[in-house]
Image (cartoon, rainbow, N blue to C red; front, side):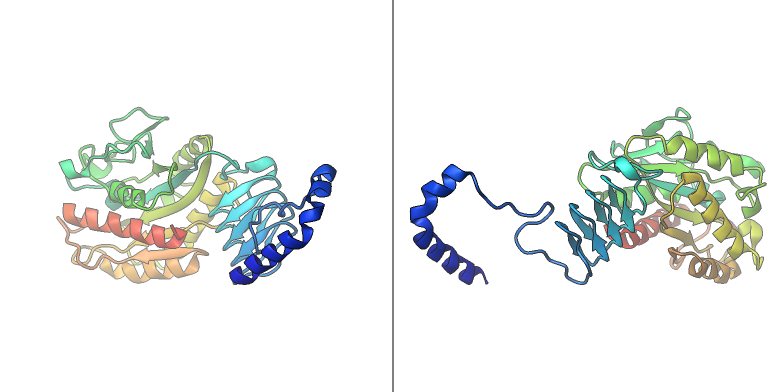
Length: 343
């Protein structure tokens, strides 16, 4: 095809040379459709809209860019791993960016993206093992909303612990390390250039899932943090990691409550797209490894659910991961999120 194009172009130049002056005077020309370069490629997709291109997509909207692994890119927009980008907007890994380029939890069509992840659960998400020098972070691309030992209500450079200074049920966890920091560090290795990660820690030690869903004592705290997080420029709700179950060990209603929590978080963000929700298994050799059947069941019940294994971890008591296991679980959360987001 390349060689044929070269031959045709050569022939055209020879035949049309006498008319170049006329063409120049008339100002006539041909431009490529918006959002296309050369041939339109719709590999694995169906129905690129006028002037658009879709790869692995249902449709790219009129005058739009390209929709990759997407259901639809709205008029004048582009969607990447998205169900829909609204008129004039762009969505990467999301659905329903609103008209004018920005929707609830979405990102505007220009500028870097602030990918926000929720860190949820009880003490194994809050972290119990003492932090070490290797747990510290100085990368400005990894932020936390508040965090223990840092100013509340603002985005700080992420350092453990990432949830508000915990200490319930007799534990003082203000000097601990949580898996969220290693989750974030792992994501940095695949973070799109120019983008930033925001972590929102809502873990509370020793708490049942009942305290996190509507009517529970920590539900409003979660809503307040989401309300603050979604005001960040270019914010995009990107996913959740969840480590909880010791306080609800073996309760058959627990998976349904995980789904309820997911739906309530999504509603608070005001988005209509699904984000990865990754659950962690409870440690073997501790109190509650029998709950892991329910962990896997909950993942299967979620629209975009996953779980990570505790294989190879160790506990420092009957409940809690030791330091090496915190690092391992955090890294596994990150690797699974990268897989889910297709970074």
